Image 1 (cartoon, rainbow, N blue to C red):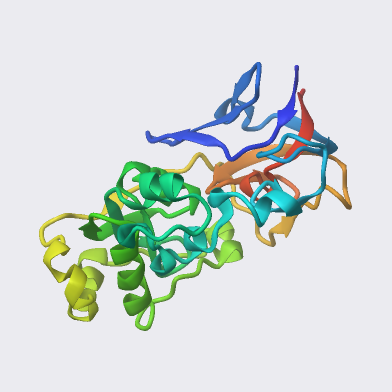
Image 2 (spheres, rainbow, N blue to C red):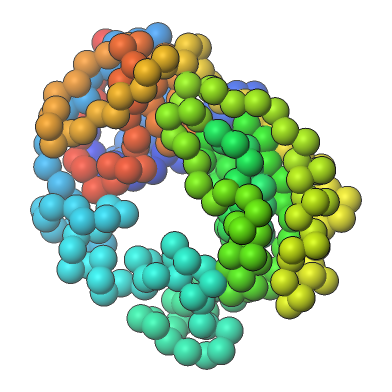
Length: 264
């Protein structure tokens, strides 16, 4: 069976285990159903997620020109503390920035490879944790805008990492942590502006990924260097497909690639 289309990050549905879907213009694929099957990935070309032109992808699925123009790729996306919509200040498109920034945001702890702090919109819980491959997570504060979440993250990452070791995450080289204890320990470092939004009584959430076997030495598939790949799918974690030969494919990291996927 063949599926062809533009790669965007896998859509997910929380469950036991999490369900993953590749969504194309005219079709979709439940990736969980491919476990233990031989899968072929053919790289065809690139297509910018914004302008739709067949141009080389620069970052985040966008071509060079779009990346430096559209609000979806502005600095505040990666660095929420740079958000300015709450002040009525435009960076690229104030209407878009107000829509995204001026809504409830959560600062959280997630355990993917080790405990890390992060920021996401309230509406993206637990999707954000799933995308990061976190097997457990907990919310610390829920604030009314992205700026407050950003300055809280900046304050807390002096005491806890804000990065994920993707190799450790994919090898499942992790240990369980008491995230309630971590949350309580970090409370004292929350900025004054966000202190009233601290979440006192919530509990950690656990997530189950559809993985049969984990790779011992993950090696990343580069579609430009290897436009044809074939392997048996053994798991899905974060936004990665895990294959029997230790190859791992980051779907989100390849947004903007047009591919043909064949299932045997």
